[in-house]
Amino acid sequence: MEKFFKLKANGTTVRIEVIAGITTFLTMAYIIALNPNLLTGFDTGSKLWNAVFLATCLASALGTFVMAFYANKPFAMAPGMGINTFFAIIVANIVTLTGSSYVQSFQAALCIILIEGVIFLLLSVFNIREKIAQAIPRSIRFGISPAIGLMLINIGLGSNAGVYDADGNVYYVMKDFFGALTPKILMKSMGGSYPMMVITVLTMFIGLFAIIIMAHKRITGSVLWGMLIASGFYWLMEALVVGVNPFASLANANFIPPFGDMISTTFFKFDFVTLSKIGWLSMIAIIITYCIIDMFDTIGALIGTASRAKMVDKDGNVENMKEALTSDAVGTIAGAVCGTSTVTTYIESAAGIESGGRTGLTAVTTGIMFLLSMFLAPIVAVIPAAATSAALIYVGILMFAPIKNLNLHDLTQVAPVVIMLIAMPISGSIGHGIGLGIISYTVLCIFTGRRKEVSLFTFIIAALFLLKFFLPI
Image (cartoon, rainbow, N blue to C red; front, top):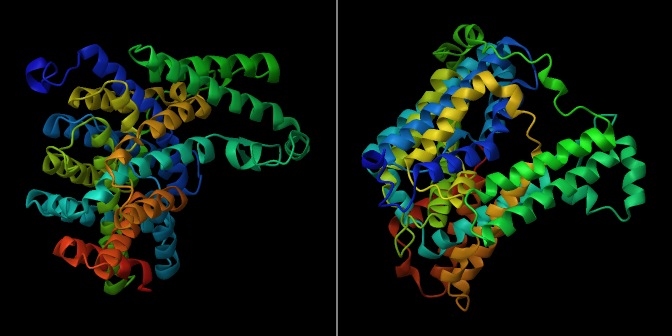
């Protein structure tokens, strides 16, 4: 391991890397159940749901292993959030346009993911994606990490941990608990679910403060330990206050992976005939849209997490970017083959990096956890979302560090970054946030007499995003 991953050269050990890999997995394990829910319309238990569940585990593991062994990076991969919702919308549109079944339309949409993956692989091999990444202005590159940090904080405090009432309405920590005029009003609205909201809020902040305190004392694995402390508190409160057995779901849990459903439904099931029925113009427009979104989601995630791990040079360029981007492309192809939407580099990898992960051994550990989750998914499911929120908020705070590299007195640098800081968490898209930042930077440079600072590639990227945002195809 030392020879292959260069542990000493990266200032790490096997123990640190394993803890980091587990930490990364726990912060992104939500995707195992959420991805099949989103891609199948919450059709839990169906053949397609089972197939997507397995595809999520397998494709995430395969992509992460490639990242580990080819790029030697501590980055984990899984089907991207946001773009998986876009995939589900495309499937529904194919159903409407062609009259095909949902499964047939799903298999047609997988063709788009395959084509995207092949395009990205070619662009990566010929260094075109790396040149696009390098064309991102220096100030924008330094702003990506803080913007992703805000996005993580927004996920942690906003959408990651929801509490459902008896009628199925969902309430969130920031919007509903801290947004309520008084606790009495929220209690009346939530009814018997209000105690769970209080437990969720307390769990989140107990975990966050525990992580910060242990990190301050330089305790190894502080993020993982903080999540475990938060989980323990949550389980105890569930049992003592709400009177619910937190491990009741394990009694009738099924630990046998449904391989047959994946093989018969999604594995190498590419329906190009159905896809062709939507028309070539529509198909090309969808592929281009997918490529633009995923291109900058991936580049943003790599730059942001690499910045936190100090794997960038003085200009914010990521070391071994070509290998990392190639690994990402292979992950996308693996996702298409197995039966899921675009597999991409996850910003939650920052949690493992903060735990000390610096090499591919961290990614290997995360990949193994994804493989095990095919058999141990019910056990992973008992980790409360509030505990993972604590880790996301903590990592989000840490990712603000690169902001110090900006010249805060230069509005042509600051304004695009501020726009990006707001755009990412609100839009939920790293790519769209970067796009708005680049457009703003380009326009400001042109009209402030600094046109020469904008490279040709930057002009092209800005133009592509303008077309994507405003051209109604």
